Length: 310
Image (cartoon, rainbow, N blue to C red; front, top):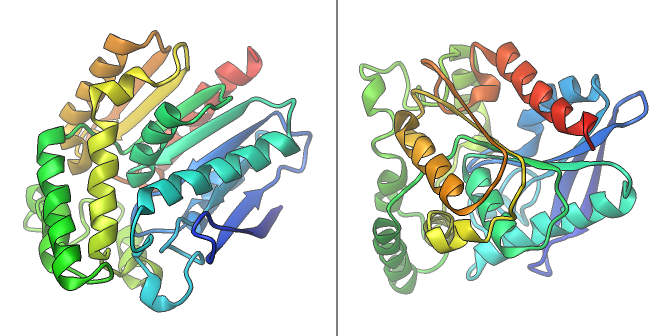
């Protein structure tokens, strides 16, 4: 059973849309999903339904500027005029608190994909949490100095053109090279998945066809910079079970190299029970890949391992 609820965002003016998927049987755990950039939480319907069949409650919300969490269509891709990353993290925490209050006896897990993976990495380092495990998908490792430069460029554009300005330069800076390795490409989004039907669905959905505002890009670069700071990694809770999954042809993770760097740094600073899964030939959106069933099963079996020992 699926249910939609809302709460007031930390921005004090936007209603945040939350999707809750409930199993028919007695629940055994909860999973909070933190979705990626230029998408929306309903794209996780099939995955949530699969987990429901295994007794797992799934909850996730549309970030500010995404899905139904907008004041108007002009706000697609706009977190806020300033401090957008802090607002996103606060909204994630609000959802986590509500889940914990409603299901105090169940083990809680969190899952972050793409931009959501960088948000979760920041969240774990900056907030007190009670998770029994975390899944990081579609992530990477980027030079913090390069991210600082990108953040400064975005900040300059905000100052000159305004917070809601849509900069093709910043969009190219963020995404420009992602499709290059798949040339000659069928579409501009071939880097997402090998499943052409999923690529076409993405290209035809108005909820995935917008450019981030300059202020949102500034906040995105900030989130990535912080997530790739060794100081930030050191603050990730010790002993937290972590599953890191990526496609071996995912440009966000530098075809596995950035993902492996992240894993190595986590191992340096924590004693987390860490598992890495790299799927050969798979691209960015593993939940929408042609080996989707294998990915679903692998994620569930990892969750089940820690549910059974809770």
